[in-house]
Amino acid sequence: MASGCSSNAPQAIAGAGAVPEAPVKLKLYSWRSSCSQRVRIALNLKGLEYEYKPVNLLANEQSDSEFERLNPIKYVPALVDDDTVIADSFAILMYLEDVYPQHPLLPQDPQKRALNIQIASIVGSSIQPLQNYPVLNFIEEKLDSNEAIKWTQHHINRGFTALEKLLKGCNTTYATGNEIQLADVFLEPQIYGGIKRFGIDMSNYPVLARLHEAYMEHPAFLAALPESQPDAPSS
Image (cartoon, rainbow, N blue to C red; front, side, top):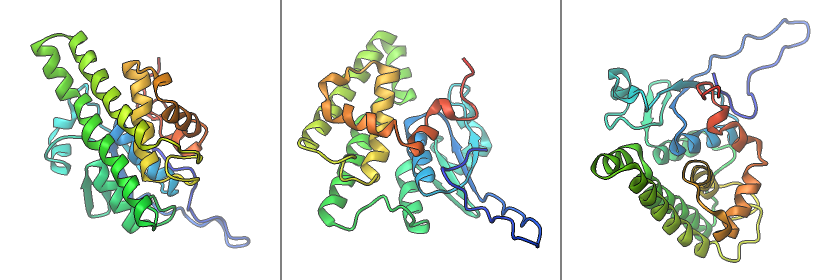
């Protein structure tokens, strides 16, 4: 079971014995994808405990009937909150904002709020879908693995160039201020994956590189890393 950065479990009351812990009601069907990583970061930031339910995409576990009932398009992540089932990371994050408002990810200021959504949309619509396994597998089948890597690097660099221009002059700790917000939750998994999976040279993106360093010092981001999950490969 994975958990957030803090626990809301009741503490023992003096003279009354230990109070039984409340059962964890959130279940996150997750894997080491950047979309899943976004949700783990948000859950950690909000201090929400959850049960980690691994879905191995390489083993095609997303096609299992149990998971398909949760998300008919068969992508991770999916979140189960009692009787509520939400799939798609953006939808999950908006649900968490509404139901668990602690540590809000969207600022009240309309301009900053729009900027956060714009950054999240660039990552979620113009970068990440183009590096998805179904896309890369299709390119490899039609061409070869080298072309798939070139394709991915091209689209990540194109997106990072846009983000770097959008964040030009940023001098705050995080992308849109000194508090972690929605933009950061989308940016870091994409930056991390770009470096680790696709060898992106971050020297071309000094603002994003600086933000990456800040994220890698924050416990909510560290706990959400793919290698920190229960199903991470041992080697």
